[in-house]
Length: 181
Image (cartoon, rainbow, N blue to C red):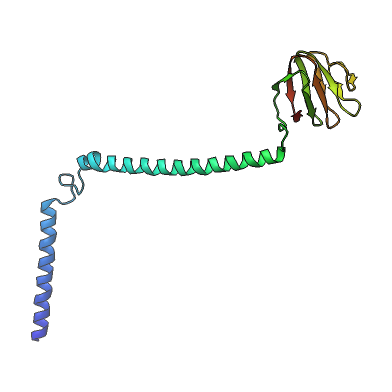
């Protein structure tokens, strides 16, 4: 019986202690709006600038790493393209016309499908096969050594045909692949 009384007294004491702690916490206002766990001034004055600084540093580090990796990939790609092009100055096919300037005696050797328009100077068709160029403006053809007409659009229909500049300065619009020699 004594054991039961002791157990009851212990339970009552434990219950009283828990109730007292709860009342004390409720009256003191811990975590309430009047006494928050973290103050707004701490968030704005200390925490926010620190987080912004660490975030900026992390982003800058990531950007530097990404830029470094990107530069490496671009350099590797450029090297592989140079290797594919060889020692000539071949340019890959494009969807837009490029302005190309030649000096007298320069020759362009073009890939099939390349389009050429003579804008300034004079040039002759060049090619070991006939026709060297097809004049899409007039519907005619040019063989090796025949003079091109300004502002006519020519097309290379046989690989390794093109033109030779016969004036000091020759300007062309070209769309397609070619090698200058």
